[in-house]
Length: 362
Image 1 (tube, rainbow, N blue to C red):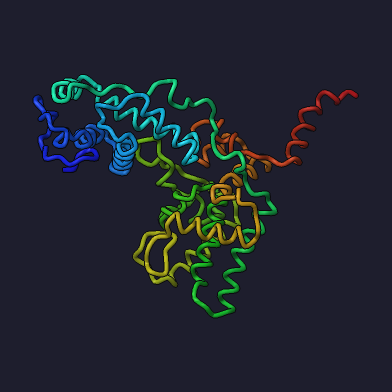
Image 2 (cartoon, one colour; image 1 turned 180 degrees about the horizontal axis):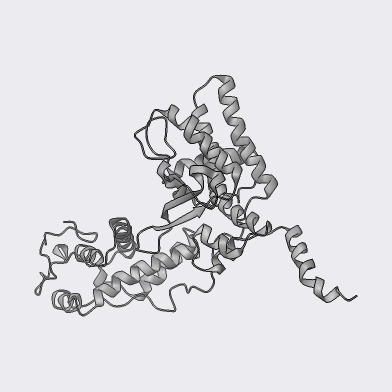
């Protein structure tokens, strides 16, 4: 198995008590790190990116892990900020992954320190500390330019998506089915307040009945099975109740009248392609960007802005905040508050209600 950045012949399952002094046949930490992380129940989709990041750090440092110092972390973090211009949350995540790796190396229960000392005359040390890593000081660290659609912008966007279906049909060219699918997909993102990846992984069977909302038939509730996971944990599931009748009508028409024309009866996906696959998040991004740019809408609007719009518009319509929080899968109300960008009309109405008791006797 390949070593962490350099070739190696070692295949033993535990750190050797007498490692060879030739660093080119050095130890192979990732193999045991992978076993250690799997013992915690972490999945390959969590472990593999961590290993790739450690290899990238190794390449940047150009030194073996037992030679790393805090200065390596300083220089790497500076490059992530000054050269790659990564977001603070991304940099913190990367720093955390390297910290976990070095904590594994210096943990006395695994024996890497003494083994490296004996083999190379040095040992791994902690390279991350409070002076060279980013603290988490606030709840929201996204792009300050990010915002939801206004109601008018969203209406224009959805109308344009519908228009693409009509144009494809009238011109008798390919793409009418895909255009209809995508127009419905954007309505579902808004109608149920979904994330892009959650949307792409929906299956037809994820819709179900809500006995308290019989008017929606088999589309009264949506079981989101691939919600955003906590780090290293499986996806979080949640049930989202249908609240917009027009969105229910749109997805019902798509499932019953349009999706069958793709010829993928045996495919479970709600959003299928003309080649019989599942629509990917990157394809959602591409279609969204094409429509947004054609309408000359601001670049700050991204697919996630539709989800923000769901929270904002329900808030403006007076829907209970706790209900919205449950709908979008937020554990904390502060997360829902970050999503909310209510209009001036809403704020003025709320202000009038707040001041009404004070002026009641005037």
